[in-house]
Length: 164
Image (cartoon, rainbow, N blue to C red; front, top):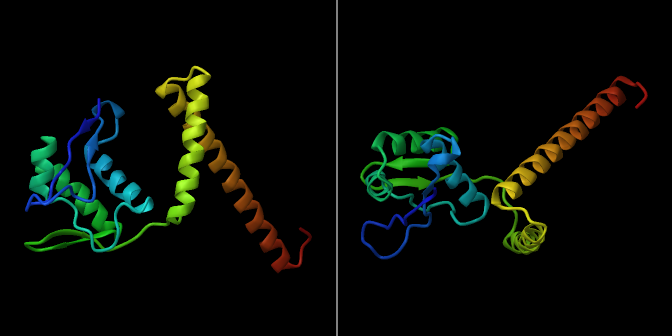
């Protein structure tokens, strides 16, 4: 089950740049779910440098979780160099993660949407789609790592004067 509640800014002028969602069935610790959601929002351009994350008490009230859980997530984000706390003001985005440009993301999102429709038509449910994507991503990552390792080995051989 996903908990889907918007965390609003203190003055109530609208939603925070990020809406935290929790999935208690995921097996992922709550604090790590919050960290991953901030990282994903940065990658997708939903959050940018200078944006304020919801205050700890706002997240606690919206999601009914322990304040220490939110503090742990925010501390992890700070350790990663993505945020910094400003006493009395809150936690702000200071860093960035690699991301594509908005037009590239739009094209990729359209392509994914079409793929999801094909997967649905083929009879895959959400769990089946997740399993297939996870497996394919793992295969892709392994091939990419092998390619990088092979390229590094070839470069070392060239520097030593050996054959590639």
